[in-house]
Length: 166
Image (cartoon, rainbow, N blue to C red; front, side):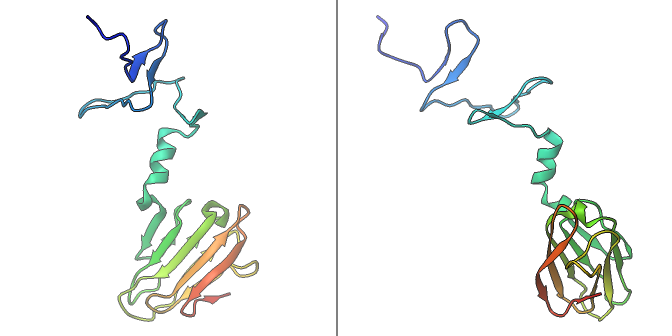
């Protein structure tokens, strides 16, 4: 005879339109399995729909997409939050088209193994401190941490070494 008091922790609600995982239950996707939310479907956490696309979530989770090393002069990719200028004997002249594309905390660091090449980072639009748009780093481990607001106006958080602003 069946036990009428047993209540499963994973069940389909009456009518079959909703699968429920009750407290203490779990839903496991085994190796090789997947959950695919098709176009028009939604994923909710605590009742709130997640509006980010899969590409946006992947980008937010990929820290390598936020760090760029330049060993020769060139442009800093929009959205990068940390740039490393790295060449012991040749000057690296880096440029940012618009500081507003790097909002939040931004770091520029001289990661050269040695040397005193005067690497520069120039902001075409925006400022590091409300006035200056060029940072010059000429020693290993010099570093500038700046907070850029949504308009590209920066506030220097810390200047490690003696990064010159002009």
